[in-house]
Amino acid sequence: MEIINYINKLAYPIAIPFFVLLLFIEIYLGYRDKKQTHLQKDSLTSIATGIVFFAISLLTKSIKLLIFFWVYNNFRFSTIDYNNWISWIVLFFLDNFTFYWGHRIAHTVSFYWASHVVHHSSEHFNFSTAVRKTWTYDVTGHFLFWIWLPLIGFHPLQIFAVKTLNFIYQYWIHTEKVDKLPKWFEFIFNTPSHHRVHHGSDLKYLDKNHAGVLIIWDRMFGTFQAEEEKPNYGLTTNIKTYNLFDVEFHEWKNMLKRVWNSNSLKNGFNYLIMPPGWSHDKSTLTTKELRKGLDSAQPDKN
Image 1 (cartoon, rainbow, N blue to C red):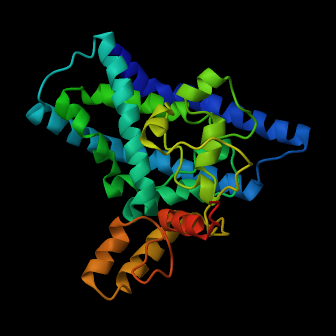
Image 2 (tube, one colour; image 1 turned 90 degrees about the vertical axis):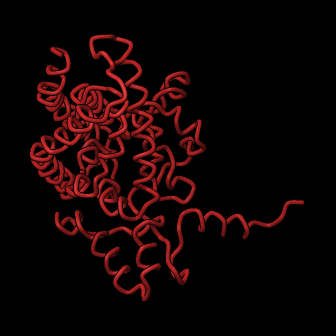
């Protein structure tokens, strides 16, 4: 339990100074190479959303732990020994697997996208983008994607420790200053190159590379896309604002407006659960529909 407490209490206090250092190094390299990836207003907006996010997280973590402990204490199928190092390896893979699907669903279900869109709303890609966080994820219950882990017997504090390490890893992949890495590393792990693709708004890059630490899940489940031409970052329709509340809530406003104007209970429900871009009258299209339309427009080579 000592290692679990150490990670949960000290991981972020130790990591945050390194986050700040990497941010300043990135800004310095941008000025030195005359390839600045930061825009002051944009980076400050991202950092401000992150500060509020971490403050909210401190308040909601106790609630989430209570829920996880309630499941663990009352419904677990077994008890997995957190002192066994094998349990850490297994949990590492299960957490990454869960993150992949939770992240993928956040891109393909409008209700969750209304929160996650915040992280993709910057037209720049740098270390400040890494902390451009939504304030409403916990309200949506997104954390419940991990509820099966205490159910099968993993201790809640061990789960949160591994989740913390997962998120800390993902900070360094938000940069344009690191080129492609050795092929073996790129094949197994999520890297800046893979994550640049994920933040691209180009049609070929949309809804690709959802991995946290291990890119193998994208390779296994058909969502991997290698970085080819440089991505255009941001949303398919960018919000053009640095107002914190507009950044955080613009998609909630848009989604609820679509629900209100849907003219039927079925359509209203679909505006919550269908992928972003879905519309009952095809006035807007999902990523899958856009790709299908592009494919059908291609001339037959036969």
